[in-house]
Length: 391
Image 1 (cartoon, rainbow, N blue to C red):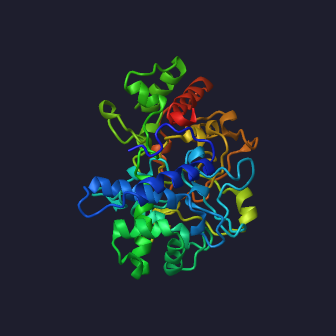
Image 2: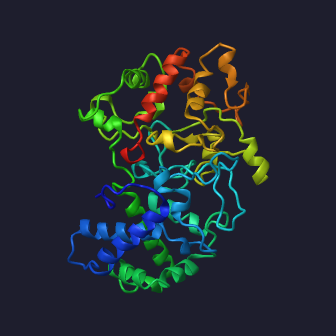
Image 3: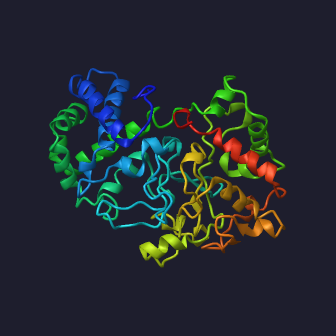
C-alpha cells in the first residue's frame, strides 16, 4: 500500500495537506464496518494514523508532531539542527533537549519484537535501547514524554483527539463507539493507528538503486559495485556481520541490520552535552527496563542502513556529521596508520569510547585496513540504499 503514490516529497507541510485531503475521503466517507475485510480495516487505520502522525495538536503547546522529529522529506529523521550541535531533538517546549539522535522511522516496521535469543543475544524492539517492544508501543512514548511532546496524561491526549470531529468518526468506526469512554483504550488506539501508518509502503518502499539493481533495472557503477563487493565480503570488511539480515540469494527487501545490540566505541558528543547539561553516561541497552546484565552497558541497536546517506548526523548521539567519517571511524580499529587515527571532522585523534568495557571487539577488529579507494567505494554503495524519492 503506497498511501501517497508517487508524490514528490518537499516539506512536511505538503504531506500534512495531502494527509488531510486523503483522510477526508477515506476515513469520513468510508468508515469501516465489521463486515469489511481485515485488510480494509488496516488500510483505514493507516489513513487515520497518517493524519495523527502530522498532527501538532498532539503536543502540549501544539507545535510538534511525530513528523517534526521524523520528517518524511528528510528520510524520516530530524534535520532541524543540521549544521549545529543540536544532534538531538528539541521538545515541544522549545528548550528540552535529549541526549540521543532521533533514529529514522523509515523501515522501522521490520525490527522484530524485543527478545533474547536462544544464544543469549538481545535483538529487536524500537528506540536505540529497544525499550519499546513494537511500533505501537514506540508511537505511544513521545506524546507523554515531558521532554518531547509533553502532554500530561492519556486522558488529556484523548481530549485533544476528540477536539477533531473527523477523528471522532474515524476512531469510533474503527475501534467501536465506546472507544473514548476509556482513556487508556483511546490512547492505545491512537498508537495502533500511527503504527499502521508506519507499516505502510510509504515508510518502506524498497525502491533504491540497490533494489533496482537486484531487479535488473539499474546497473551499478564500477565504484558502487566495488563497494557492494566489499560490504558483503567475508574477507575485506566486517560490515555484513551486523548490517546483513538475509543471505546473499535472498536479498530482496534487505534491511541492512540484524537488529542486535553492540558497543562500537562511540565517544561522547561533547558539543551536545555542553548544551543539554547531561553528565550521566548513556548506558544504552542497560537502560531497557527488562535488562539488568551489566555486560550490556553501552550497547545500542544496530540501525538500518536504508537512507543512511540522507539521515545524518550519525550514531546514537549524532556525534559524526559525515557518512565518510563513519566509515573511517570503523576503519581505525584495523589500521595502524597514524593518519587513520585522526577524526577528519575535528582534526584530532579519535576520542575514547564513552563506555569502553563492553566493546564488540570481535566484530570491530575484523578485516584489513581500507585505503581511500575502498572507503570511497563503500560510501558510494551506501548511497545506493537511498530511496528513489530522495535521489
